[in-house]
Amino acid sequence: MYLALSGVAVLRPKRLSGLLVGFVFLGLSGRVFTNELLKLKRLRQLQKCKTEQVMQILGKVNRIKGIYFSDVTVQNRRQVLKHQHEFMSRSFVVNEEGQRYSLKEISDKNISNPVLRRTELMTRLRGFEELSKELGHIGSFVTITCSSKYHCAYAKSGERNPK
Image 1 (cartoon, rainbow, N blue to C red):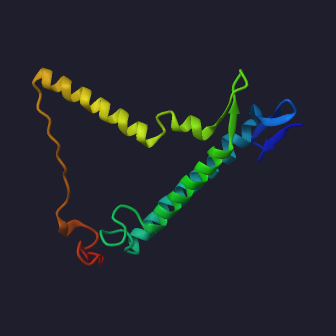
Image 2 (cartoon, rainbow, N blue to C red; image 1 turned 90 degrees about the vertical axis):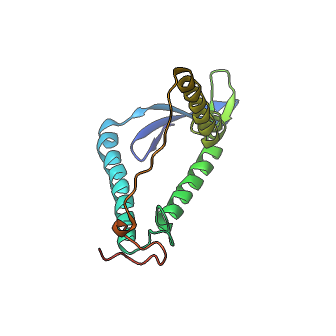
Image 3 (spheres, rainbow, N blue to C red; image 1 turned 135 degrees about the vertical axis):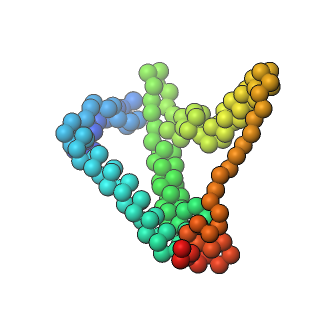
């Protein structure tokens, strides 16, 4: 028995002592993957981009309402992360020795974990700081921004700037 996911991935069930422990990936059915999935991915990206543009035009992105993104985009992102977390928690992989791990366990132990990513960044920054001190370099951090008259919305009221 084989399983085809939306006509793209072909999987064979893997059993251990009669229990279903996962699926073995057999391959992709080429044309569907290269054309339809890429089109769907691009369409979703375009939808996200256009939704955010409309929210900016409607004045839903400013210091009062949503400083960097609209509430709709933030809510959608949180929902996506929740679904990814649930999927990884209930999906398992089995190695050659028969050890079973959830994808969530694996994800938590690599650089995709935000806590580990931040720790690695801080370690690298410390290394650069020590190296720059040895070489006698001086670091500076500059933020360049437009004056408030060029912002799309007023800071206090959140109303659209007519300029």
